[in-house]
Length: 83
Image 1 (cartoon, rainbow, N blue to C red):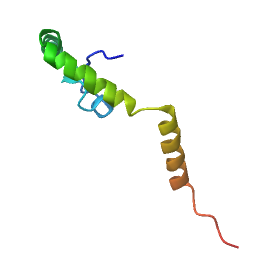
Image 2 (cartoon, rainbow, N blue to C red; image 1 turned 135 degrees about the vertical axis):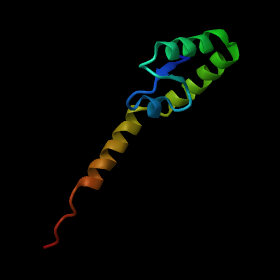
Image 3 (tube, rainbow, N blue to C red; image 1 turned 180 degrees about the horizontal axis):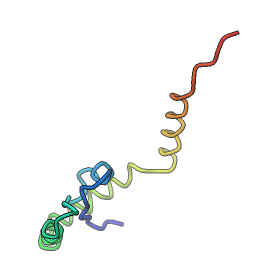
Image 4 (cartoon, one colour; image 1 turned 180 degrees about the vertical axis):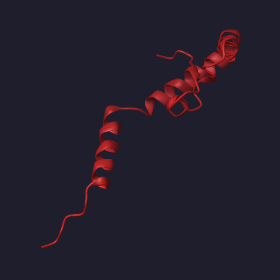
């Protein structure tokens, strides 16, 4: 949808957003405040994050998810025994 993102550095979120977000420490209120100030106060950054976010989101699809899931299952499946 093109909304600039301020994102926590917790768990797998940095892997998901890539370079399409301003990252903040979720345990520090001042980090969240600084991230919001950066995005709200810088129109160029907002535009850049919008563009990066749309490109990042385009990398995710149900077709890709299904293909990658099937590949994991295929790799985990034991080789068939030859008779």
